[in-house]
Image (tube, rainbow, N blue to C red):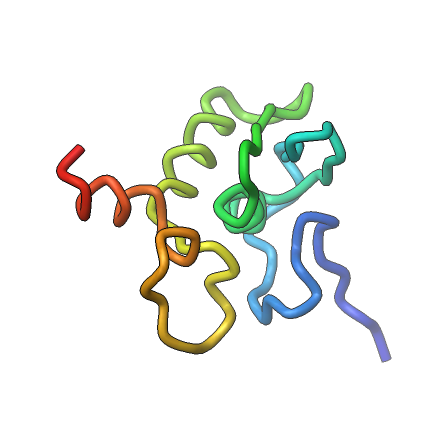
Length: 101
């Protein structure tokens, strides 16, 4: 029986599979980080306050900006159920839309 491994950026409670290999490093405000696939990198970045994303050395061109742009529309901890009404529970894009920016 084989156990499928997911990238380090995949949150233990996030049920989704990786989409491709690890191609980015996502860092939090104190420079703790995790490498991840584009999918989990974006989901992690969306869940961090003051997070940053960097392409790994052998990553495809433009991957960091794709992850950054994807994270903009993802709600923090998007796999968690429940009503989301507070700004900290909404995506950056939703907050901009709410506040007319």
